[in-house]
Image (cartoon, rainbow, N blue to C red; front, side, top):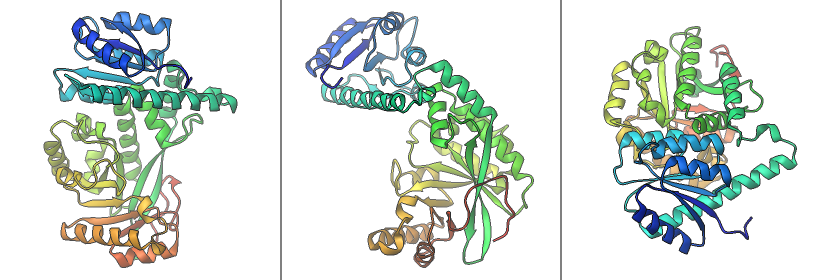
Length: 383
């Protein structure tokens, strides 16, 4: 379809804005259909397919967020761009949960709108090509375009969820410091953590998945020696879940839990971030920044999270023993962390040369296949 013009569905109950945006997008080389309500937009989608949907958030009868949720009943991949003249954190969070492609503040400049539409079209085209490749390979059962199919597979994955544990070692002390809890499922169509998280995001069920993970880890941690720590991954959306701060089973063992918050996802969707992080520390949780070195915001999240640990992304670790530039970066990071009172964990260690280099550079803790692969259930806490 590269030779065809992209098809855009534009939805807004304000007709002057509808005309203005239609003109902008048409001049960018797109075929534009318009609708003045969410109900009419769904009728358009029943009759034809679109490369991008652009919708206002505040509309009568059906809001843009409700339309986004309904669109996912038709197509789990079509990019949806939401626009609003009255942005709120609550609507931004819901937009992320429902899988909005962009959240733009009105008035939207022509260049910003054109770039968003063009990028969305390219990504949608890539998704369709991936579908075709799966079909050619005979992997039709894994298509994500069928919501009911994805829903049933996600439910099966939740029911068959289990945790793998990989040790994090203190090499100098020659002991196991703790374990990272890693998401797994026996559901064959969603076998990896990224696929499960992607399904949860598309279905708006990240909160449910996060709660299931925390309950499983809390249950299994009770069987472990009391001096072992548990590293538990959090999605940014989890930080908006009041369950994490009150009724979560992890609260009972908070002094043994390090919550890993990835830098790959923006923290802008978290409401009252400073207060929430303070509450977690008050409950006894320790905080770690995960994926340091490949994240969304570099080191800027340190100011908001005030972590006690930092996990270096494996992209910095692989081959570090023969890579002077990586060594210089990690040495500087370790020095800064030491000055800030932050422990450094290097993940993805696979070779003895990497291990020895990391220790020499100042890393406190190490994790990777060199020491052990993730295992179902807790292995003996021996070095």
